[in-house]
Image (cartoon, rainbow, N blue to C red; front, side, top):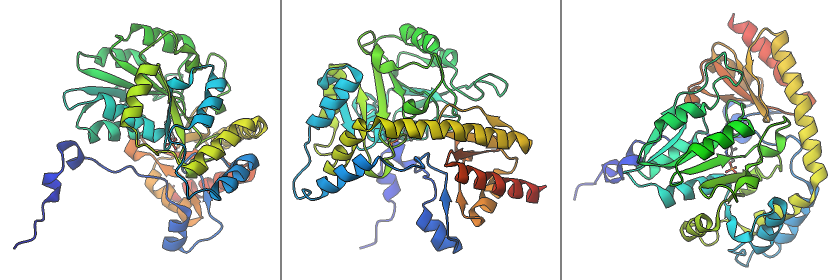
Length: 376
Ligand SMILES: *Cc1c(COP(=O)(O)O)cnc(C)c1O
């Protein structure tokens, strides 16, 4: 019997064409491939302070009970989140990272006859979850380079794309990889204008970091807009990316649907315990936010000193224009620094750098200066 060798043709059409998510290069991989040590990873928007010590202690404790299944309903964590956001517990859906809830949304609401809308330079997971279920992605034109939120979400353009097959709209606020944001009045006007049978997903992965006035906390709008879904994560400011935990807030009917599709034990016991403890440690978040504010200024000033333009960011990363990003990325790798090339986000000539400690930022600025000089 001949070996069957066209499994790709067996896959559903969306998957045949799917390109896998490209994560930031892991530290161990750079060590293996380049033989460098003392590696600095500023590629995945991780917290340079790490997790709260309370979260680590809770995780250790939870580790002693891992022969037991986790609480599939996440009762204690949901109780704490319900209190934090002043929402009922049945409006919460826990996810294995907020990626998981984004995927649940796609699997719950999209068929091949439907479409989802997001901006051109938006989080790579939106096109992946849309395409994986065979739905159509409608990509909206972003703001122009000279807009005060350059390359960011243009909600008028999104509104123009909505048609009778639109089921979901993914809005990252602030947006990754641009670091741009949308004001409360603008976002609320948009949501009011969207038909009620179109679900607006506002992805607030970087919520805790944002320090500008007029930035909306859309979790407080859930009572007003039944078609609003808000996603949050413990991966960024809370420093728990490796544990994989995030959640969605929505009206209870949507939460019920998402929970039907969800794997029964999608969030592990260690992650639940660590997240619960992390919520109690406000001072760790405050420290993280202060450090990030200083770091954003340090990087922006450094870029300006080097004559490099950047996209003003309110998150914990910043995109800087370096001309030949592939070469600069490679030179930084050889210096033991991992940043994020963003060609896959179609951003012309940029690399994305996560804000680190002041020493991390100093190091990446110095290496960048060398890398850009070398290129000239
Ligand atoms: C990092 C990030 C997330 C978080 O993903 P997790 O699965 O929670 O780790 C979600 N949305 C955006 C826009 C992000 O940049």
